[in-house]
Amino acid sequence: MSSIQEATLKPADTSKMAISMVKSSLLTSLTYLVLLMFLFPLIWMVMAGFKTEAQAFATPPVFFFTPTLENFTRAMETYGPFLKNSILIVGGSTLLAFLLGVPAGFAMALYPGQRTKSTLLWMLSTKMMPPVGVIVPLFLIFRDAHLLDTHFGLILMFTTINLPLVVWMVHSYISEIPFGIFEAAKVDGASMLQEFFQVAMPLALPGIASTALLCVIFAWNEVFFAMNLTSSTAAPLSVFISSFKTSEGLFWAQMSAAATLTIAPVMVFGWFAQKQLIRGLTFGAVK
Image (cartoon, rainbow, N blue to C red; front, side):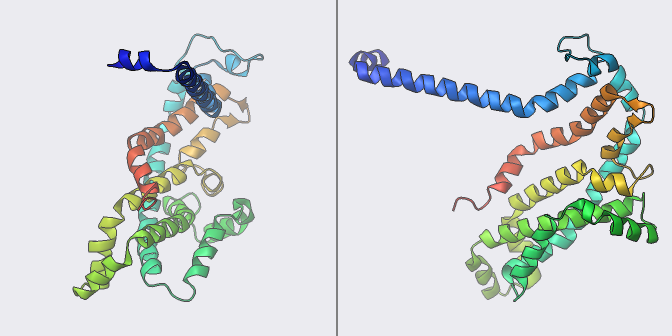
């Protein structure tokens, strides 16, 4: 059948198909090239972790070398306590941000007040404030409250960072649900708590799950506040990377190995959760 169709194609149609195939190939090649440009710093960092210190600093750069696991072995010697701190702080801050942010987003979406819109804009504006502008008063508050270098202190800090994100995203997801569903629940005698747990939560679950994933990723990658508010006891993995910059110099290869070990858990987590993340981020985009 296909040979008959090819035989009936006109030369002009064949030429259009060839041009279309060439355009498709060029577009695919360009996509891979752009992807390589974005991933090159990550690839280079992973490669540096398998080099010696001399090879990592070599000029011109060394692309072909014999890989060594020495840097990863040294990084693993102190990796465990930092990983434990990261898991505890990221998990605690995400849970606390949800306990506060999900009910707030639900209430702002279904029971908006006169200042709900301005409150949401104010919460969004806090994300635009440069962290260096508040680090001094925050440091003094944490010092006087004895929260410096404590797990609870960093959990509070990361909760504050992620709370606007949770409120905004939950507010958006709840707003996407047809209001008639909630009115029908009220007609059936549902209380506010029943609306929240039995109507809103199941319908907005994909969006809430993607919000949790974003909170985990943002908290895991946060560096500035972690470095300024912790030192050793509660230091997460982001501080672990900087420990390879000492008074003796910058151990670039070891730092690259430490950075690779730091991003590995969240990359694996993101890889397995990517379908849920995309589903949640596109929740309500198509009605």
